Image (cartoon, rainbow, N blue to C red; front, side, top):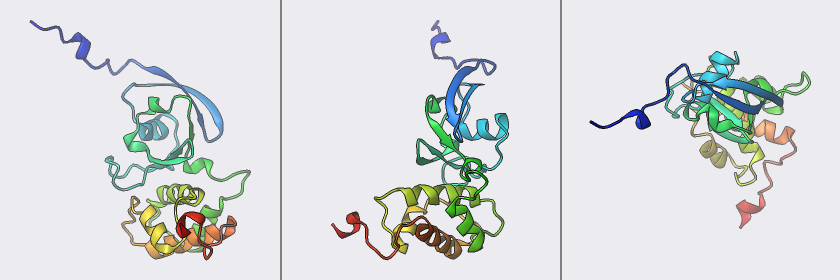
Length: 181
């Protein structure tokens, strides 16, 4: 008879310590080793801005930043964030001021039901910070293709991203060095 104890999953009541930075604040919490970041954020930490959509990494509703990169929190184990910086939609505004992406989404009516909006904003913020992504509409659409809006507000989302680009000091008409090469 084989001993399966080495291959058995840990009991669900066992936890591991997670030290990370959440929205600029150091945090230490206990998490189940198999807990995904999305569930920890929503259920354990009470941050409901990050939405649970498909749970398969296909809709983008759960997008957060991990060390500045946009990631689907439904596909990442929380423990993988050990020592990392996680930013959710709740951490995007600073000192009571909306981030330019948040302000542009508001001004451009870039949402309908609003369910996808936090993930859209987090992806948009990451793409605007990435110098490898072109400023033209086609490049933005491609970069945002992992975020689904069931209401079809894509035109307004694109307008909001381009408006935020200008507010952030990125000229949408000047090609970046990567676009010219």
